[in-house]
Image 1 (cartoon, rainbow, N blue to C red):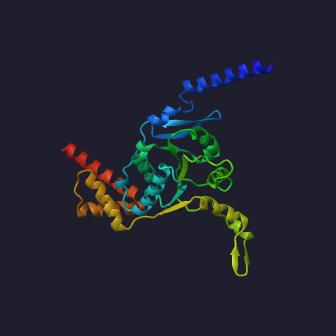
Image 2 (cartoon, helix red, strand yellow):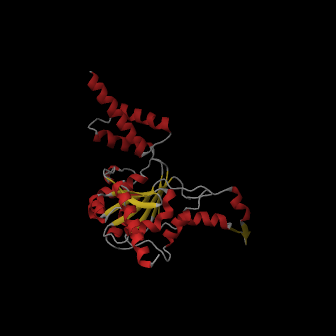
Image 3 (cartoon, helix red, strand yellow):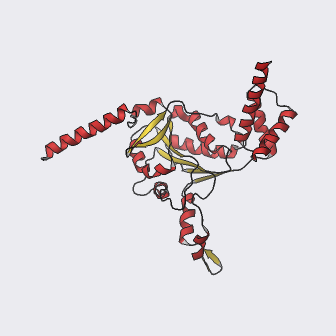
Length: 293
């Protein structure tokens, strides 16, 4: 087969593949999609990656996130640097569940979507595609946050190496219009096993960690920003409950406060999520009772 015939057949095969993905709604998002939508999810089908638009993402007003003002301020400033075209850091948000880590990302999208911010949700298993994702986004005039929610790795999972390379900014560094924001319930994203410590040693009374431990700790350290999130005090928790109860046009009484405390104790969680869930439950039960009267 001559070269011309091979080129024609290759072009036909590519056209058919693109048509197949288009008809299935699984084609790579054209640049126009980044104008029409704010949020996307990275998907794979038959080894083919594409950005799937999320037409109605759940957005949150940053002002509704209470008790985490310091963390919000850091990430807002970093994101504004990013949008202005100035250097900005990748960020790891870690800590107790339900304390607003992923909600901040949704809040940033709500606040800065009109300024060109877009969020691409990427699963841990797809981190190996970071270079492919970067190629898709590189020429866009938008600014993208690759969002890895609830990120952690199992001991045998080697997909963290792709993330490590991306964070390192090596020869194949991700372009300037992409940042990585990740959330995790633990500070170190890789599990530290007892056997990892066996090769640690003491030199002149200083502990020198084994290479395995250094490797596991070093992944988290490659994020330029670390933000810690903790469960709230009872006082701060009740302030958040009051905020949500008032937002539903209900009165925050002593009885409501005591009920909210019991709600948190039953779940062993004084978090923003728990406060919002209590307020939703309260308004739902109240409205139903009024309807049945």
